[in-house]
Length: 271
Image 1 (cartoon, rainbow, N blue to C red):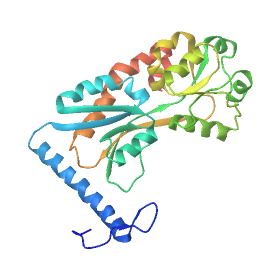
Image 2 (image 1 turned 60 degrees about the vertical axis):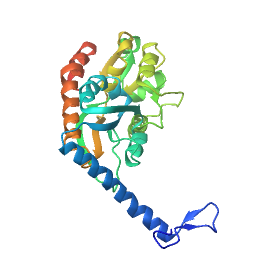
Image 3 (image 1 turned 45 degrees about the vertical axis):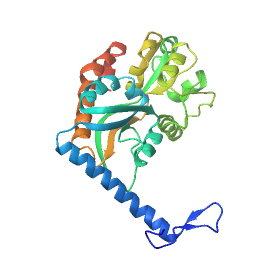
Image 4 (image 1 turned 135 degrees about the vertical axis):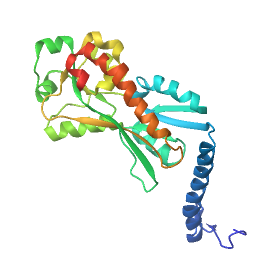
């Protein structure tokens, strides 16, 4: 306050609050601090040095499949690498709050902050059934399935869970809320055990490949449903690194993981 020559905090309020001058300083000051950090990183990059730290967040299904090989490629280019995995909305907030530098997400943040977005790939949702249920109902409709067996749902707070819920609501499919699961591994295990059926993506299937013996993957009946994975970073802070990482992720998926989907069902290779 002495340096600026203005009152920044209203001390009469409880809890304490910024004055108009304080709010203006926070808004403009935050942008200046971010620009300063970007400048230092850009200078190091132009000098040919390694990134001092790279904090990258990934959705769980990506982290468990493409993640390890991608991180192996990134290690030589960084002094310290921090990897986080979790739900897409949480990672978007972490990117905007500068707790992460790069994220791979299905729910890119919509913000006034300058971001660069690199699409990786889109994947169609599939119908997953226990093998016994698949033999008894080889071409099931979702509405009929909802009356035969429970829907094993992804957590409704997750982006994938909310996406599936909106799709079912649009189709008028009423599936009672009886079971919600946080991870693809557990969800596929529940289906393999015959507990119920599920909707998920090929990348989630790859994450849960240990339980493939007990399930059958079928094309999703009715209108298609897909999700897109995107790599997002704050613009200009890491030069060409985000674009390079995105290209490497696509190449790794096509070379190492896409062929594996044909083991479960040949049509999945292109899903």
